[in-house]
Length: 501
Image (cartoon, rainbow, N blue to C red; front, side):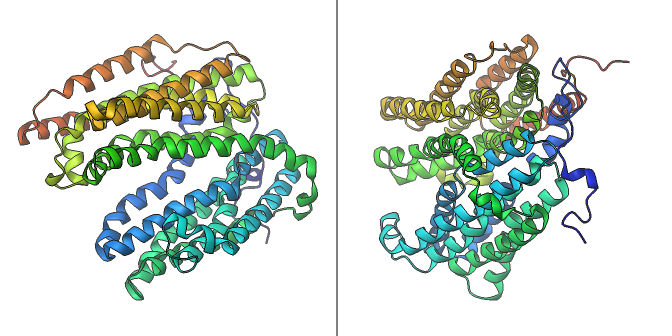
């Protein structure tokens, strides 16, 4: 039996590039591919968020508040350590695999080097945990911290294995590894919680089981080439791409969470909780864009001609504007009902609709910046991503501090929105040094403008029971043009254009 048992032989090799000259081709990297098979990878990537959303309220009821807080801190620690344990090598590995076309030797060598590196980082973190753990709010360097480190070691390697499987377009193997690592870990954790003891450490052990099983399957399917550990030129080239991506990710971490500390200090813990609820509702589309970026990168890289790739990126960006505009409209209009699902009435929910709108609006500059960012990464020009993220953080902090005392939570949301706009602007300037900027189609801009205007207008509607039912019904109707637009994009055409006879 081979490592690729159960998969068609051609699955192990990236398909030939395919985007047509107009950016709407059906080959790998074309618009229909991005919104078709590419979206399947987005669904798998985002499954962890969906399951976490379902499991979180259950955990909040099964665990004592102190245990639930300890688990939340452990998950944040896992996310932070993973950034350093992976060090951007996951995206560098994707680029290497697609560049090498039919030869996976160097990519598997880079994977081996990444596994060894992530293991060393985790080992150093474990040996020094007694010093840094108390500074992060953990009483000592043992218990939940060590279990989290056992979670991190295989988790970082799994992330790189996922990248290789995705670059090779092996959807079946990618899905099994991904679901074991994310959904499996949470299912195992819930089982241990119910059968053993209701503590954060017991639940965290479920994550360890899921990641170890995913790691074992990943080893079977990816077959790391351990001699690649000593390929210094290959590793240096990967690190050159990865280092700016690490700083960009750290900046994004601050960009999405930093205002909680400002709100807590200026407005108090209760306002921080209210903002978190509104941010969770409004940030759904931006979160999905992050997974979309992971799914689309290797598919776009497979288009060898940079000009054709830039054309496809511009066309797909316009398609996203359609989907994001309709989604933002639906989320804003339905916000009164959605907020009541996520929080009790004691959170004083009515004014939070404006926060939801401002946070949801941030998906548009995120999409614009993501498009130019994808082009830069596929060209291995990752430094502008770090610079743009830094600019976004600085602008966000300045605007937030300037507005929060007068506008409250709306000021914090505006700070995030303006920061994202600054980030998109910096990336636009960076990419135009290599390629002329591609303006959006007028139809996509009209649709986005209309959706933003309708969403903003809905803020003045009453929030009585009858009106909230009508709002939710309208948001439900918005799913019809959303799926029609998605279908058109999957067919390789703009939503308003009729399919060719």
